[in-house]
Image (tube, rainbow, N blue to C red; front, side, top):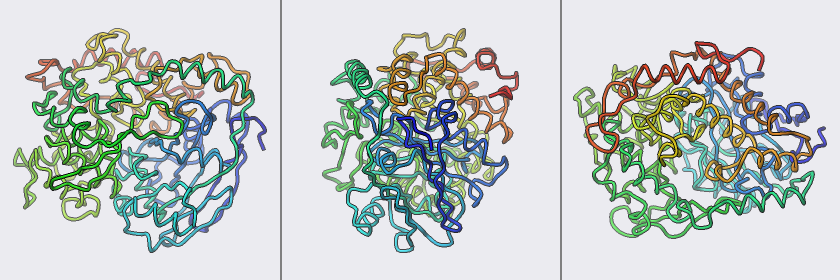
Amino acid sequence: MVTMKGYTGKFLRLNLTDQTQDEIPLKKKIAREYIGGKGFGAHLLLTELKNGVDPLSPDSILAFMTGPLTGTMAPTSNRYGVFFKSPLTGIWGESYSGGHLAPQMKRAGYDGIIISGRANSPTFISIIDRKVQFHDASHLWGMNTRETEDAVMEQLGQPDAKVMTIGPAGENMVNFACISNDYFRQLGRAGGGAVMGSKNLKAIAIKGTKKVGLADEESFAAKVKEILAKIPKDGPLTVQGTPVMVNAQNALGTFPTHYWQKGFFDAHETINAQTMLKLIVDKNKACWNCPVSCGKLSSVKEGEFKGTVVEGPEYETIFAFGGLCEIADIRAVTKANEICDLLGLDTITAGNVVGFTMRANELDRLELGFPIDFGSAEDTFKLLRMISYREGIGDILADGVMRASEFLDLEDIAVHVKGLEPPGYDPRGYNGMALSYGVGVRGADHLRSSVFLPEGRGVVDRFAVEGKGRFVKRSEDFLAIFDSMILCNFVSGAYSWEDLTDLYKYATGFDVNTDELKRCAERIVNMARTFSTREGISRKDDYLPNIFYEVPFTEGSSKAHVVVKEDYDRMLDEYYKARNWSEEGIPPEDL
């Protein structure tokens, strides 16, 4: 067993088919070359999962990973990731969540939990200080996520345990089902909840008491103090949360509206941060060891949605239902958020799917037999429930925009990259963001590269072309280490490469330098990409939907702009060259 600090030195491998368990030692070489989190996930999936495997088959793998900083006093060291082959896209899948569960996994004695096989009947797992038990979950099947968390903790007599669970959408293998923890936190994107549901796994409860050891506690504490001093005490995320982006994106003309037809929402003031704070926000809510406290515990106190409770809505949920679906009421958006949370749906894809359906209906290209109109909250709620239970048209839409559009002959209006629906930043207003969407390893993504932030603030010319390929590459590398340590992107501006190197060194005792860490980042990105190229991904898949090249905005600050195809090719070439990939986007064999 590995003896270095920062890690527990063990992975827990569970086979649901025969309910067996095994502890796998973490090798020092693997720890040093792949760091943790995303790095561990990429190495595991690339070496153990055969290409072409059905992501919803017993042969698929669901890997929950922590990092070497998880459970330490490093700011935002509360996160864990899940890594899998996505049923939504058929390629690399990853998602991350905060809250309080990840430190418990580490304290329970594991750097990661690797799930394979399929249980014969609904099952949940408890892991209490390395004691692992399989439990019948037939009585939990059909419960929503919050009900499940409560029921599991009560059954175990462990009110302090942390529970990850799926809702009915995961049980019904909706391709964009999420995994929830701490009632309000989600491993949201790419369909990890569907993979969990395919394995008849309803929940995992975790509790641990083991201390996370550090190689040099004094130096680690001093470095943490330095980093904390760089995090604003009452910054925009603390005061307004992620909804601060509603006004910002609308002002830039990049707030996706009317299912990607516009970049400006006339009614944005009905769903912005100021309206949220006035009407629904009760208090801030922080993840474990987070100085930012960006979460907003909110409730609707009157009207038809009275009693609705969520943490949020976050910006991405507001854009998805308020912008794409044009629901001009923050209370109705909050209700849509709650429905997705309880049933277990990724709100970004869910809003895209509903908006896609509204657009098809508007064009008279989809006959449903019931209304599904832009601006209608009730139509939205109905469709979300139909999707979660795969009822009627919901059975088709449950497969996501890409597959639904293929089935319905609506591919010309579908907006996705590699099968993943985009988040709330229209790429017609950001060349760097356009490239980030295109080359995103899991599809259109705003969390694997943060170039939209300096572009949006004017630090970098958002319409420039030269240098954007290298810029995106550098941002991806930095966040690949963040996702391997694992830390929250919201404080990435407070960390430098040198800070990350020092924390890693003080946590593990490894004598590393910044150059070595940067090579690790490149290795991790290349491995995740290679997982997808094995499945057939290449340059042809790194392009955007035609709407972003061909249809300019007619209003807003990004009026008349499109992504110029020739410019995009130049950026893509520059990116491939910076990565040392082939002209077809294939990483070198020597990873």
